[in-house]
Length: 277
Image (tube, rainbow, N blue to C red; front, side):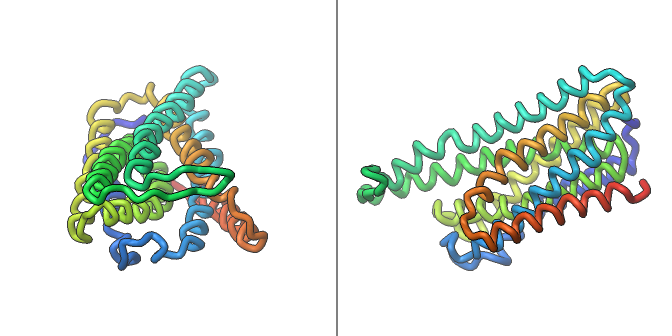
């Protein structure tokens, strides 16, 4: 990787701030606390494009770039890839660990012969559990944004082009993620403005992650490891976090549209990665 200079620091910081600002985007789309107010088809189509973009960036840009820096040594390359997958797995576990437990408390139900029988919780218990969901979601979101900041910092230390591509991929997949987080906050009792402020606060960890990488890791010897780390994280997001919800689509027409958008995402990353640095 190249040394960190003022230009790199400025571009990486702007990218991190843009990633944080996308937390305000749901306010423009959601005018109700009900998630159904936003068309699920639109979300899934956006996720399809995001999945293709992430996979395309991994295999058409990040991994080839990492291989150029590896000097024939594949061990750091593999360690970085596995580390990226492992770290993003931990982030996913943090955000989902509480989900089943708290959701069961806030909306208790019993499953019998494939039918869900709802039971009505005490009002105050439901309110407290909803608040817990909101605050725990903010904590998980802060951790997620920090790892995105690490990815942005690593990419800009490689090249401005690599940084811009990484930022583009993060922004593409973060929009539907931020919409879901915004709805959770609204349903947890946050006002629209309070939810926006909370989203922006957690987004600040993205800038912290970026600055941490820029100030600590500017040694070119780290390139064979840190680029695959970003690739591993993106691969996990695409194939584990995003793809399963798309696989559940039963409508043939909608499935075809999603596949087309995935291909478009891969193609977009191919075109962008082919541009001169």
